[in-house]
Length: 318
Image (cartoon, rainbow, N blue to C red; front, side):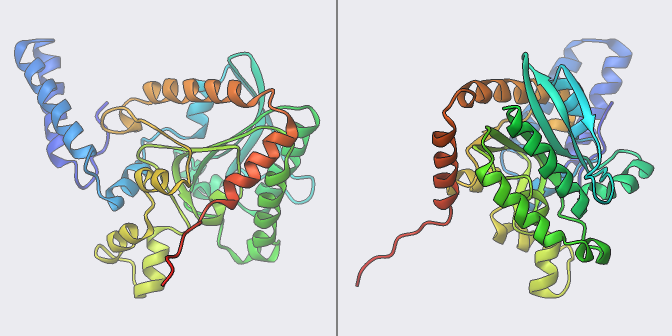
């Protein structure tokens, strides 16, 4: 199935349609091979030079794999755990026991939803206070039973409603960050799509923090930044904000905000979810082997030093 084209993909989409027609009419002929090579070259050239705003658009593609997709493709099993024992069960943040390569883990991940009904149920991936409370409770279970924690981040930000603020949204995000800094078990965090604001950081403190190649991770969404700086978010100010925020995987790897960047299939993860899932699984298995068995005091000290180093700079005398 040909994915819905993004604004900068019209030439790619035209070639994909031509290739689909050739394959349906004549199968694997010489012309189809030529178009396939041309298409691969075009994708490679375009996706190697994406602007920050174009990267944001890729991270939001409606066909991009979400948390529940990866749960099916990456893990052998998943048993969901519901509720925060205080208010309710936030469907924007899924938690549960999972197994990968024979290793039992505690999984936490944002879910945006596919259909309109699911998106409304999940609030488009925007977590409420009860979601962070649920995550905190489940992480304590993981620590009790010495299970590694894996977090998948994919949210434009925490839910901005009045009710969420009344129920202590900001405090619960801060508490979640604090609890994760001292959680005595390995934590791996992966930004699989959007990594927006405190909504992402609420489950983003780990021994390894990585992101997919065309994901973004930022203190605020480009629209939010544009609205604050220029009082309007439009086709001019949103790209300017994205450029200023330095939110791409290339920038964040250079600044030391993320440890690893996971390469995406040619044309983005939405064009080959299974290949992306295989890459993600390989990364998780390798990283778990590195972290599991590390003495707890060494793990916590390294985690502390990792985040203390963020934002370091030097000044020149004179």
